[in-house]
Image (cartoon, rainbow, N blue to C red; front, side, top):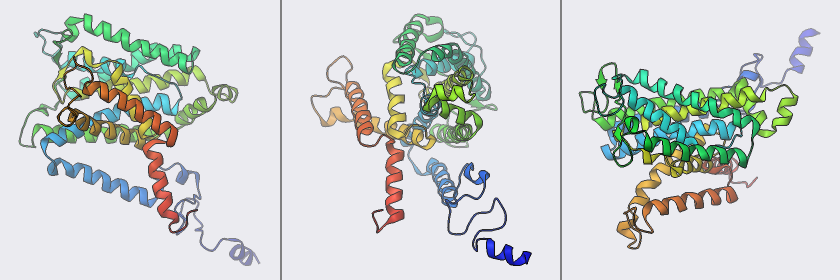
Length: 387
């Protein structure tokens, strides 16, 4: 009688194991572990694996100039993921991302700079030392700013973080021993890994190939870490604070601790991105960390998709690949100048274009490029039906 009840009560297609999947139903989860998996469907595992393989294969397929642009895009994606953690996941609006990027860039440059050079330097060129140090110093600055986030919210917090950009821009221009001063600048951090210079051609490949592979590997590491953070208890606390901080406090989420943590982690990503970004050009100038850089990061997050790691990467790639197009405008449109002293110039056009894209995406697709991908995927999943 027991055997009859068991055979009649069990669904015919559901395996007896709690963690095994139902055949033909990739989105039907039979355990909590399946719902929390990093890649929760076989299709995501296969497509992600293929995407990573193609990205690494590009190192030998593309020209050096294209690899340089993509390497910069990957570094910007690391910074965009950091901004997405504090703004997208935790709901704390920050316009001061350029300030933390600058702290990371100058920390890395000072650590790897020559001891007897014109600017401050300590002669530590190993990347595995100055990269975490750049992130940690920026994270310490973020933790110092974070108490403001516990007392402010919305536009008030945005205005305060925006002030960091102008404050930092002034300090970096005046601190010539560290930065070299406006219009002069200094050498960026040296990407050396276990004695091998990655900013020089060698037996492993050209400078662009080595830097491209390095930035891609680091982007994968930072993206996986951010995705795991979002799936953890900390990520769920961030989401609770973002959705309604008063309700989160009522259910026992310590607001101060998690807001400080969000700023610290976000600043760590920004500092690492700053340390890496200027190793590609080999030169860092204090005027680079202005409001436009913060607007670029905001555009990457909003255009790519808020609170999604893949959206932040897509947004960074979109903005980075848009720049070569806008920089070619003076050759196509005569009244747009490439000289910054004339109006209108390509940098002003870029600023207007970023703002226009943000407005258009917020009106027509607030989920950004990630939302467009969801629309296309759902269309083909239900095709030929429209529902």
